Image 1 (cartoon, protein in one colour):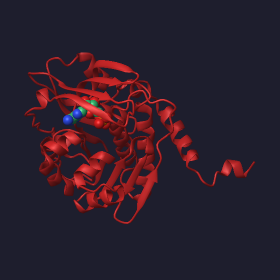
Image 2 (cartoon, helix red, strand yellow):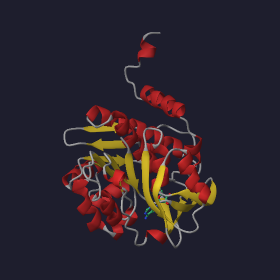
Image 3 (cartoon, helix red, strand yellow):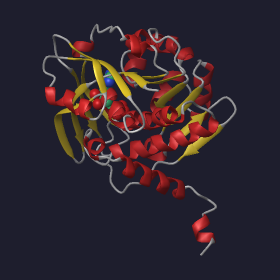
Image 4 (cartoon, helix red, strand yellow):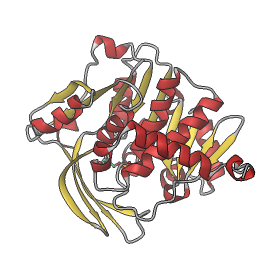
Length: 307
Ligand code: AMP
């Protein structure tokens, strides 16, 4: 089983209180793919421009990511410039240049159309829908979006909602999408809009999961220092989808474990700039932090009891 994912492959300029990087490989899809590949095969669908560096494609290939549908097109690679405030929960998009994504409507390869798991990373809702409509009968579809698309194509995203099993949005996006300030109401409203499950990401405060019959909450892994929050949401989605693929499907119990793996993946990304931490990561690192995460939230604390 594999994941087919569409989203942005970008060159980013990122400013945080810890420094600035420019020309850094990023984009929602890069973060997602470099995280999800630890859990199962990932096939990416995106456009890149003439300025896209061969070594960046190789970086995906070397990690087993299928780039057959990473299409080179005349023009420039998507460019995003983000600036974080001292409070890194707040960021401004200084520039968003779509470049080759302007009118990109790809045809999926025959094997991609048979995908069981589909991830629609943050990109235009039109492109997300175009990709999804080519997949014959996906078992699980997850999607993400950001303020930019909610503000620029709300109707397009709302149309997509009934086809989404798992929607991942942050608190600000959930409020904007639903018009509800309270996050419990916003979570419920997302389900009413058609998504089966809502995962609301709250940065350093963790994640809220809403399903029709239950709520689940996990904290964020406590870190002494956050260097660059970019891509945390995409890496979170990578852990969630990754665990579902590894488990071969979804029920409430599998989903809860997936949300913890998602939180683990998100916590790694923010430790360094851009995709750096994902590149240095090992499966052992992931498992170690997963176990530490379980211990962090274990109210029975069996180790303490036996001492
Ligand atoms: P996240 O921090 O999870 O929102 O993801 C950040 C990534 O999203 C960056 O690497 C950007 O290249 C990408 N990005 C920023 N704005 C957009 C947009 N409007 N559409 C698609 N991707 C974007």
